[in-house]
View 1: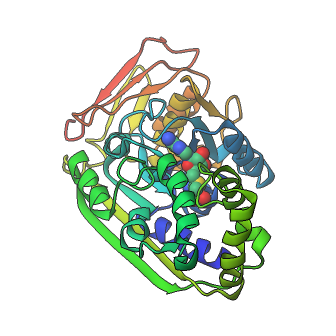
View 2: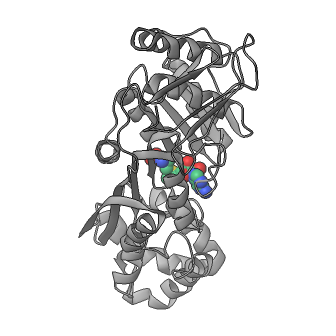
View 3: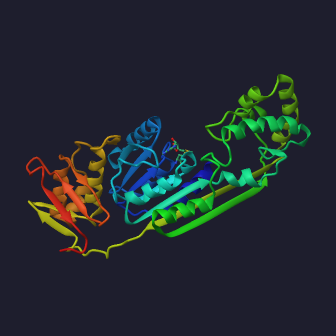
Length: 377
Ligand SMILES: C[S@@+](CC[C@H](N)C(=O)[O-])C[C@H]1O[C@@H](n2cnc3c(N)ncnc32)[C@H](O)[C@@H]1O
């Protein structure tokens, strides 16, 4: 299981094509499987934004980041995948989401948000179970992949409970397939879209024991089998149900059906690649160097740090090696980047691929602004 998860994590990250210095947004980060894998790949000058609807899981990731001595490269954002309000337009290089969209009713809105927060040329990598596959293609006589013909009356009652809780045509976990994901990516404006569907139909592995099987659920939103039996069957019916199913479960005499889809895509790069000189404009001693991911990453982090629902663990910390490196490449831009650490900085890539920076150091006019449009000198 762990090996399979590692393979999936690596595939998701491979498809996000992360580079050193990138800013990665991992949506629905959970306990950080993808986000911490991404942190290794973006290296010491990169950033990972962990976002989730669960504050507990964000806190867990923050604790882990502290233990890894990597907190200054991590940002934690409490937000839903379909409302990433705290993440500015065009502010990240890559977005990942694994097993998250199954929890969200409005999947097209998620893809629109992923597209919005990516800068032109940014990459998306999504990976989701396609639960509709097993639900639609499994034999009616089966329950959890086991042949229940001898107790079909009981299986029907238990199944009805689950179907009532998660109607296959309306529940977000079941009401979509891989083509819907592809379509949503396309509608959101992504180009170079790829889809890989993996389907496994194979014998069940023997369960470790009846108790483990009975006290587990297909997903966190539905009751365990033991709970479902208690709600739907009498004690005598439960005994009959169990007498049939337990030997099948323990011997692995069932069928496992699973489909998963990876969708990865690129946001169209509209503007021609700006040259170094065209990409830099300065005013009042401040300079913006868009291609210097270190400085842009810094701005992005501060932007997140200043918005509701977003937290930065780097606030008030001294400039790190990232700024020093950037300083060697672009002294002025980096100086500005360092100064901005003490300021309110807003970075906003609009539809015209324009960067706007407001604020500055305490020595600067706080209303100072820098407008830069790629291609303009
Ligand atoms: C199965 S876990 C996957 C966690 C992580 N992506 C991984 O690969 O291990 C699903 C995660 O999605 C989060 N989640 C559920 N609904 C969400 C939503 N609407 N927006 C963002 N995340 C959500 C859950 O809190 C949970 O952390």
